[in-house]
Length: 317
Image (cartoon, rainbow, N blue to C red; front, side, top):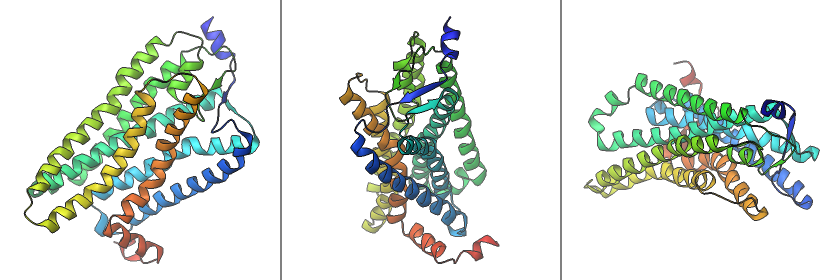
């Protein structure tokens, strides 16, 4: 019976970005520009790092990986939301919803793991500078990013498989502008206890363990920086880590609000959840290029050379 109920649903309805018709055109234009700037900004970072041999270091390798993940992350949700606003439709097919959920979880978790990896990279660079090249070798960096991709895919497959087992008996409106775990469980007409437990333990581990590792890394980093005798050296170290900390604070703050803080099904709560989702799915990937490039002289120089077309020397080497 549960399987029949599940297969009878061919599409879902999304709550969207706003219930107010007068806001739809403004939201469409706003999100189009945010999406274009996000993709262009992160793509420029990838190209600037890839075409400048001076940026072929672990820190920038992880930054380029983060930019790629951000492009894919925001592309999973925003284009569909824009299409729905433009066509004045709320529908998303069942297969499309499951696919969106899987890729959203994959790229979202990838952001989390990469931020933790970047914190570890900064920890090694500042606390163990003499062994940095040996510890963060190109091979080890590649293995770390590969391990992140494998873990994110396993986590995403687990959650998506469990959602696939749920029954959806009627076209209830998913209280979000994309398919996510919590909203899907809210509109299911079957028992979601297993899904909730897996989300609590597995999802909590995916969010909190990297977050704790980042905090521990920065405790050691700050302790090491404060022991640096040169004021200029301390400022340079804090500047290098400041960009990463700003992204961590913004991203993890909204993710923890969305996944680890329970909410009701009231309209105000849905709007708050949607605002939090917009922050970590759209705003954070949008701000990353500005945070990392404006606070980093090497990145600004590389972006300047890229925009002026002076990259041929790196491409042929």
